[in-house]
Length: 104
Image (cartoon, rainbow, N blue to C red; front, side, top):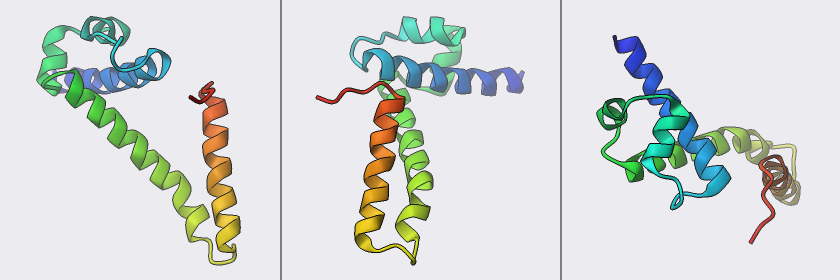
């Protein structure tokens, strides 16, 4: 039973990340999250108090991934500060393109 519950949590996080990225936080309903994740409402409320708490965890996971990805480029002792900033800029530009973000 615990394995399914843990799987439900991960499914909810993945569904939220996808839906928030695609259509934004406000337009995404809990019902849409449940349908996308394929989990029951009881599983949602077992793991999260509401959509806000789920969104905060999605953001925290995203920020941790960014920290992990950018740490090496910022800590490179061989690179000048200008080069480190260029690498950081390139990382975010590539991320925007990869996620079909057009700015604004």
